[in-house]
Amino acid sequence: MDWSEFTAVADMKVTGDGNGIHVSITDVVSAQLTETVYVWLDGSGNALRIGTSKPKVSKRLLQYNRYINKALAGLGGGTPLWEANAWLDLVREQTLTAVVHQPPEIATVAGMVRPHLDIERLLIQQLNPRLNRSRR
Image 1 (spheres, one colour):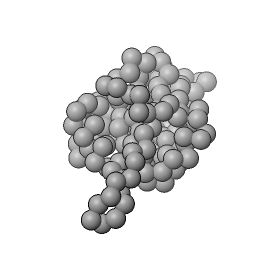
Image 2 (spheres, one colour):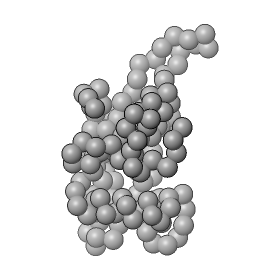
Image 3 (spheres, helix red, strand yellow):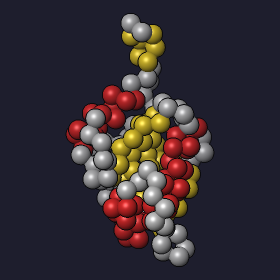
Image 4 (cartoon, helix red, strand yellow):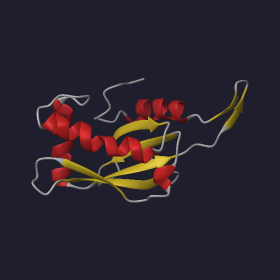
């Protein structure tokens, strides 16, 4: 996959105690983009998770801290425990990187539209990332 149209925007690392994850924003300008597609990549450039964000992508990426750590602590939430453990195992081995792409708006009969949801769907179909639960 050619990731040249994407910009690195965040890192995910293991916490100091080794029992959780921590996401930090590495590009504050790109983190302000809206209507984006983001992809979590491992150190070899393999897609782990593909998603979208209509509001600022930083807001979505920083939610990974809460959702994953809450599941790891046994407090339930939106992330299943198996997935939280998979994230933790990955960050114990390497730093993960989130890359982001904001597609250009295109003219449609409904007006100007940014096709981030379509791009997400196609990338999930093409790459079949291991941590995507939904296959739109």
